[in-house]
Image 1: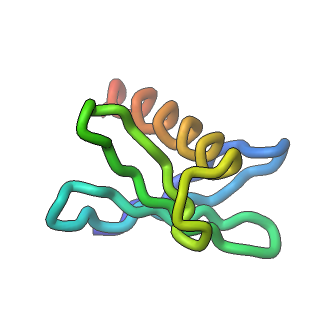
Image 2: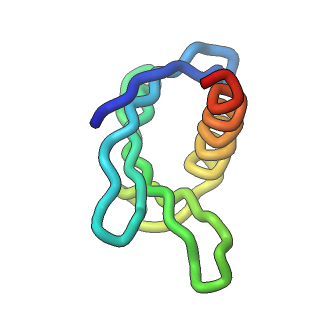
Length: 82
C-alpha cells in the first residue's frame, strides 16, 4: 500500500511516497526533491538502531539521515491523530 505525505526539507515542501515493506520488515520510501528522486530504505541493525539508507549510494548519507528523521517525526506526529 502506498502512502503519500509532505515534509519540509531545506525550506521547501518535499513529497514522500511510502512504499511497501519487504519480507525482512525494511520499509522503502521515495523523497521527491527538486530535480531528483531519492530512494530510501529504513532498516534496523542487530542492536535495533534505525538507519536510513540511500539506495543509490548504498549506505546512510547525511541527506538520507536528515530526510529519514523528518519522516520519522511526521509518522509519530500523525500516528497520534489516527
